[in-house]
Length: 175
Picture 1: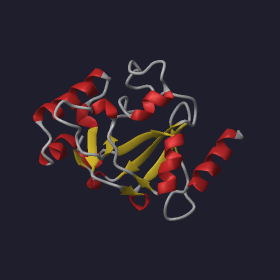
Picture 2: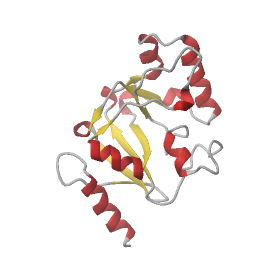
Picture 3: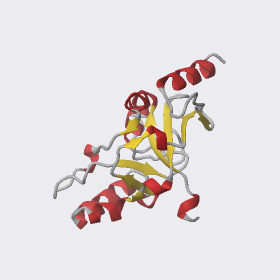
Picture 4: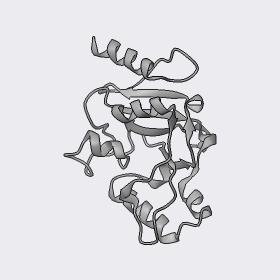
């Protein structure tokens, strides 16, 4: 599949999504899981085209603490409407390993990140990054997992807000 036809997502949980919506931006971060002997890689916004879920994302640890890191690759963890993802245009991202190499990351840091991904059931070939922040006006969709498939959160204005999320959750949970 060509890169331009893939969808890239920032995987998260609803509690973190609320903070992202409050900030109106996905902020760069560094997962402590990725510490390295030559220092940590730069803070970035992480994205993946893994479907239906990116197993190594921080949200997996909070949504499925009892099964992580052995959560199956094609299972979305957690109760209904707790897993969330934000779809972004591929043009704002770049290959994570190329990005880190251009920023001077030691080759062993890049290899360790890739190995950690494999160890936790992820495919590092699915990963992309953005130096960020990634503002809400660039997001294509915000989606929540309903237990069977991803559901788009409708937005009332030009950008997604906490009000949009609350309206969606109220409607879905009342059913």
